Image (tube, rainbow over all chains, first blue to last red):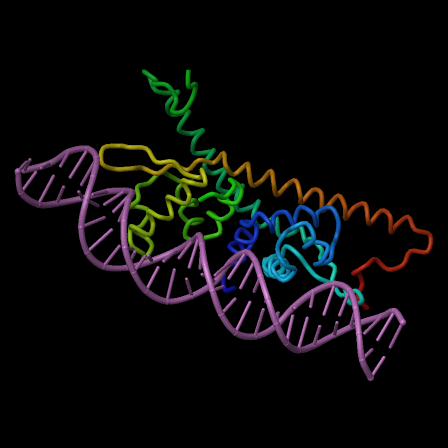
Length: 117
Length: 117
DNA sequence: GTGTTGTTCAACCGCAAGGTTGAACGAGGA
DNA sequence: TCCTCGTTCAACCTTGCGGTTGAACAACAC
């Protein structure tokens, strides 16, 4: 649990069960038992998954009588999207510039990866 | 390696070294040796990281004499951003609607979880 | 041919992740 | 009070991951 925030978020969403939990929490808050019902694993395993999601900041748990409803915190998604967008844009920018260079060459060879006819 | 594509991509980016490799490949293609230079791990370890990135579709390797330049494939990012945006939007939409409901109530009680005074 | 350079394969090690079972804890309800 | 329900803690098992070393392989240079 000493990893940086970005690693925690990516790692938390690397598990299909946890992604499914997030998907269901996007619809409505739910308790651990409700969340565990559809899966054929124990409630304890789901509780562990929720701890991972909580440590990643993706989820929060409040107290309501003896239940502990789980709530999705969507803000952390920004961490990822910002990281992704940064490098995607950078890569695409580089690709575009390479494309321009190739296009501006006197005897231009076909663009790499383009028009696979 | 039997995981679904989304799990592979998230899992690949959960490692800080691999994210750094992606960041550097966004600037320019590079060989395994070049990529390994800044880190204090062996070239073999970096080669393994690249295999993970390649299996996730984030990277491709061509052949150029005895070198194997590594190239960033930015398209796979869309997989993630689409997944993230879907549930982020859903969660925000739900939050907005809940907010509307609370605002439209005649004798509005304090929002659940809000104002813990 | 014989190196030399760049890369990958194979076997191993330590450790954390996801799963289990069993017990404990916290808050109501009888 | 005692019991039940929902949840978490503790101990354990197995698997996978990131790392290592050592050898193999591929494409050049001599």
